[in-house]
Amino acid sequence: MTALLKRDLMVLLRQPRGWLLALTFFVLFLSIIAIALQGDIGVLNRIAAPVIWLAVVFSLLLTFETLFTADVQNGIMEQYRLAGLSGLSIVLSKFIMVFLTSIVPLALAIPLIGVMYQLPMVHIAAITLSLLIGAPAIIALGLVSAALLSGQRSAGFLIILLTLPFMIPVIIFALAGINAYPIEGLDNPGFIALAGLSLLSFAICIPASSAALKINME
Amino acid sequence: MFAADPLAPTALRFENVTFSHGERQLFGGLSFALEAGQILWIIGDNGIGKTSILKLALGLLKPESGKISYERDGVSITARRFVGYVSHKDAFEPLLTVRETLAFWRDVFETDPETEQDIDEILSQFGLSGQALQRTHSLSAGQKRRLALARMHIGNRAIWIMDEPKAAMDQTGQALIDSLLRAHVQRGGSALIASHYGPAAISKNTRKLILEAPQ
Image (cartoon, rainbow over all chains, first blue to last red; front, side, top):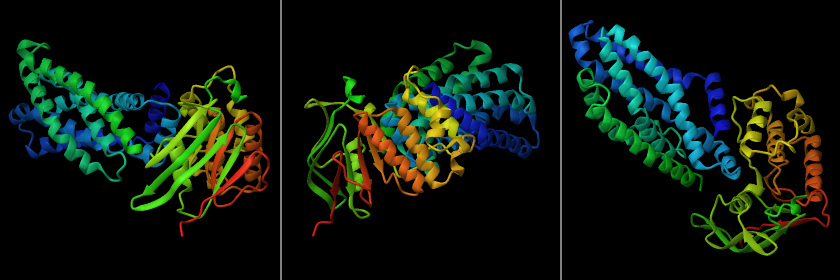
């Protein structure tokens, strides 16, 4: 798995379009909303959390399409299988790669967006924490769709259609956790439910993605 | 020698294998055996099912009926880690250099550090020293074939399964394949090769299976 992760990171450094696309979309989307609302700080403060979460979900959905398709279509996945690599290690390496190259940059960008929206520090911390807690759920759900459609060309739209409905509970629990954080702290029901959802999604979606990859290779 | 490995297969056997693509049956009742130390060339026109036979042998396709097995001393065994494949696809990450590609696959194959060959030696053996720092997307078709062979060589597999290995190869490249096959067979390895054309010479280790379209 280390070799796979190392290869994926090298490739992403040489072709940063994938992670830069997500980050650029995230920053542009949120900047345009601020401009559209004419910098009304009261409104921006109220809508910041849901809008940032929507931006996170949409920008991550942009990155899932290319996760497996190239490797399936150019025969690398066949060679992995023959080399005895398990589907689980392939999927786990992609999971770690998405976390490092998409979630971490977005988490680092949230404080900057917070400054633009003039959010209180506690609010910025809550949104960043919610992203880190909910990240395993978002990535795992995206991986299943990407693996299921890895044999298809231009499956980006289908991946969005398949994944988006499952993201709704993640967003609901994340927003509940963010609202409760200033009073109840990190162990509020919203964040606990979000963490549970992340664990559950990880436990179900990683083996499911591995199975989907195997089916697509047959 | 591959036979010295107690887990390595000594034969690949197809027994009464039937396979279809959609409605069209490619072959029915196909039987053959590939023993250790043998090369079997599957020869036939385009679309006749050569690649399908290779993929069936690799377990990437399932037969409709019949049995495909790897055996050691007459007993069926799991042999995936002893099988190497050169497909008609590149199967390389285009943004990695030739050297990085070989280093990556050596890590994937988890070769024994005591027996592993230096990457520079392999590059030289396969005529790729000049392309070591070149990204794989910029290689010619023949150079990509050489790289695919080098990858299989790193994996140290007992059974080589090759789809048109000489396609796009110059004369030096074709001679390289012949010498690799000779050395492989001498070590007790075997090879299943799909090609439009047969081998240059048939020896006691080399056989042909000619596929013809049903009348």
